Length: 346
Image (cartoon, rainbow, N blue to C red; front, side):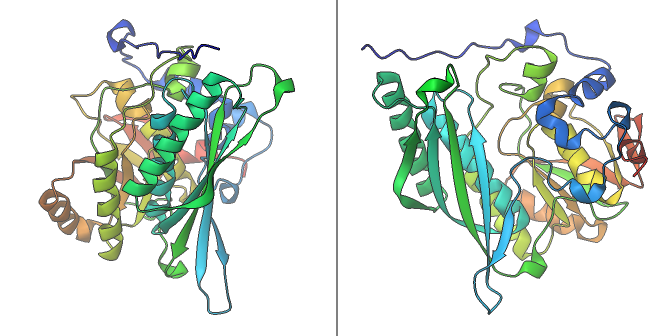
């Protein structure tokens, strides 16, 4: 059987009109099932949603557990990805592992080991062999770059011939070491007035985003922008920022892009945000694109200079987004209401 490799469909951003008013996009994405964990507008439900049940809101939360009576702890997270395994399985696998390590490091957890599982792969088929080979290369390369151990079997397979046209999916599990549970950092904004920064470079990219697929109806698009060397630099910086105790909260930009990452950070403590977008980047790309290598962080006002000096010395790109509010959501001087609208009736 001849091996057939599907090619990505290029997306020309210029062919999509840049939105002037993003309110319609926000409310449209609120009903996206993939973002349902942050669908808090009670217009769509009679029951209120408790902030205590929100968690990280990304379906890939980190679980903590004690390993002995000394108080030593470990963390475990599981992540899945199905985009473009047929096209570029190595890059797709590297992106998935990068997401997992970035998530742990945001919390202050040191990732140490990873294992992978391929679902809906027919290894007897050349296409299945191509996906498996690429995923193995991606797993080994990411593990080497991020200094992770790999389980002895590396990648396991599971093929269900009776399920019909189900896309190939890779699932990885990652284990991390917790030095001190009392010093872990969460994703939730802590206090009004805190400064909000974005670590990483903003790019014109909406590939494989919920925004592109759900709002524009385009499901076939390139993988999000990703550079593994940039990931290494940002992850090293995260470790040092934790050691210097410069982070009040931290979370990777995930599903739904920066806007929904901000929302996930704001809701738990009933806070809001007032941000200014990057004038050099398309508004929809900046707020809803899911390019890799970006971290949303909160820095106390008295530590802002230390943070800026640290990032400047290490030549790591960052962007001053704005500050945390008592509850109002503002973007580019426009108000989008208050956070309690999303949890009213609780």
